[in-house]
Image 1 (cartoon, one colour):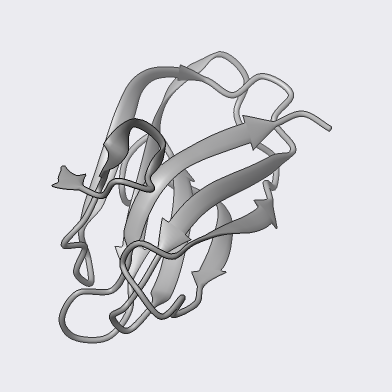
Image 2 (image 1 turned 60 degrees about the vertical axis):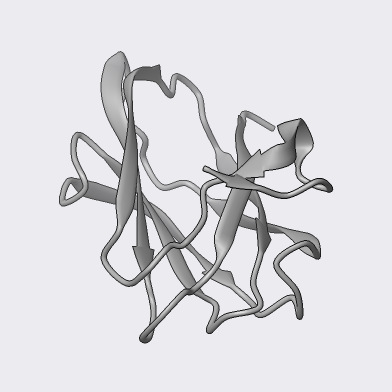
Amino acid sequence: MINHTPANGGKTVGNIENGDWISFTPYVLGNAKNFTARVSSAGAGGTLEIRSGSPTGRLLGTVTVPVTGDWETFQDVKTTLTKPPTGTTTLSLVFKGGAGALFDVDDFTIGTG
């Protein structure tokens, strides 16, 4: 966790590099239709993959994270989720991109609308 005053709660998942991931268990996706993340990047930017089961599990969606110009300049990015599982699963966010620090994740929401 990295301290960033403008982040919701004052902290972000930071120092993200290519291939890093975080998981949440148990997670119920139910009727999930979309994924929105609040991100920042003074690095390379990259992509964020949403996966079920494990960091190498079924790909539910991918969203591009742009360079926002500063680690404390946040922007929402959104993608549609494809066929999320019913019941309880492990939700994994997998981070991809070039070399060095890619981006920070402040928070995320999963929507049904």
